[in-house]
Image (cartoon, rainbow over all chains, first blue to last red; front, side):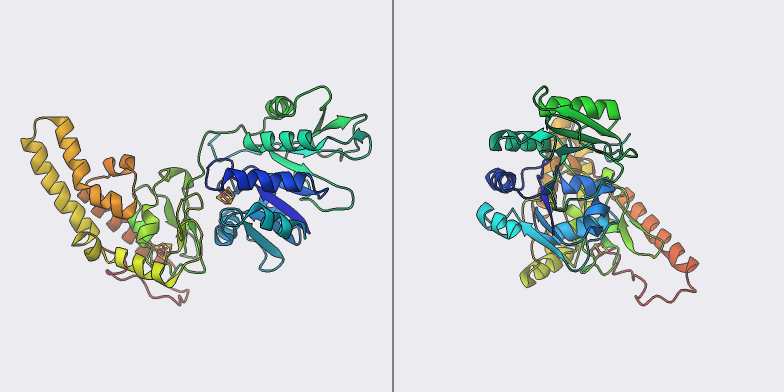
Length: 104
Length: 291
Ligand code: SF4
Ligand code: SF4
């Protein structure tokens, strides 16, 4: 199981305190993870790194709305598999709940 | 290089054999500063998975006593956090590796939810900036993301299926939130332009344009005329959430009609070219095109 954290760097749509808190909990967890500055930006650039994430087996993604994340990967030509991907929504849920899910 | 091209530098925050562990605050600071400055960061741990290397240049940062083993095929740089600051090191290596720099841009472009899209082409007809196109399978596609006007979600408001997302938009369902029945009904009403503007969109723009032109010809004070145009378009702005900048650069009604005709002709040409291919979907009708 891999973990991907999206920092949503280029806009303020994810609450800053939730973002920071999730990142801090990940940092302190002893868990391996990948962190990207902004999945939207990567989708726009059709970044090759998205393919590695999409094809690399089961993944938990801390970002925003699952529908947005799904179609951002699709738009980059690297659709997420229909199973094995869990998208956690930092726009809606608390850092505590997200960290619990990520690290479960 | 356009703002959406180029490889990012991947930074690996290393705390494995041959290095000393970072303290919690140092690790968090390094990570969040790098992310805030547009870098991608991986924190590997023994026996756990991260995304594999993908050919992008890599910088290994840590309190390194010796450089860890690396694939000779992979461009890898090593910097010791005992000697350098994480962000400075990343910037220096990014420059040396020719990787992409942080751009002050908001990645703003439409993303289509193909679970909902019916390929009606209203977005293609409506968008004034050639953001949409049609692919070889005659499927609507977002082809010029870079042309999209930052903070303008107008095309998502004309989509009858609520299939267009802008993940960086403030409100749902355009931001990717779940689409509810009332959203579909509301958007359907907006597409029924008679509800929106008391006529069809192009007709309404044409009337407004004509009125504005009449006013311009009698109005000597240009700034007053501009204000009037802004007032005329106020309802459009309010209902479709279109930024001023986009409203003020709207082409003339004739331009819009010409654009719609061109888009329709292009589509018909494509349809004719691939007539041997059985298409399950009906060809767009006059009504579907919204003109
Ligand atoms: S995917 Fe969501 S969380 Fe990530 S950058 Fe885009 S809007 Fe922000
Ligand atoms: S307007 Fe909506 S449903 Fe129609 S083609 Fe565009 S995205 Fe698809």
